[in-house]
Image (cartoon, rainbow over all chains, first blue to last red; front, side, top):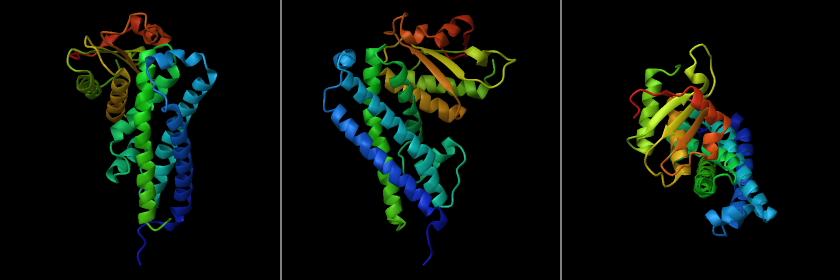
Length: 161
Length: 109
């Protein structure tokens, strides 16, 4: 039987998938508990009062960023290597992922990186923008979960899990 | 100004696609100085329209510009009809630099 992948890259790819799955579960948890509340401008305005709420927002932003990095810098490149491809730049990595249908849209995936700046720099200083960024990050989280799920399906297809 | 004609065109296209016609785009900071090397691309977008979701527009601009200009540091300041002139993003050190050396990208209006 002919293998559809390079077995010497399997271990690294599966390690990256395992970590991404764990990070996705952590982000899912924080997202679920954070967005159980109605997030709007008045909610953001009162964020400074109960410190545990601000902490939850910070946890969400940081977990969002970590998963984004894990997918772009480790998960996709390692699964690309597993399939005999070696995209060099971040843009090549994402173009390959789009071609493989692991992500729906490379431009939207890159664009979501700007959310990290907005959620870090605009903290409380622009309530409307911060609220919009938070809601956009919730939507973008689904894009990250879908990428992890698609690559997990690839691993199953390759007979690795 | 150290942006090529193709880069300027790509920035104009992104501005028009995301923010609509009538958007003014200027480059400022080190990219304006011909003798400098490397550095960030600092861009100021100003539209007379009201952008309902500025976070979404900033993400779309960032995604489109990164695809067009490559994976380099791009700093975007966006001012729409509702952005007060004392807004933090317009009074940051980065935006202050804009006051001294803004270079409108030809035909971007």
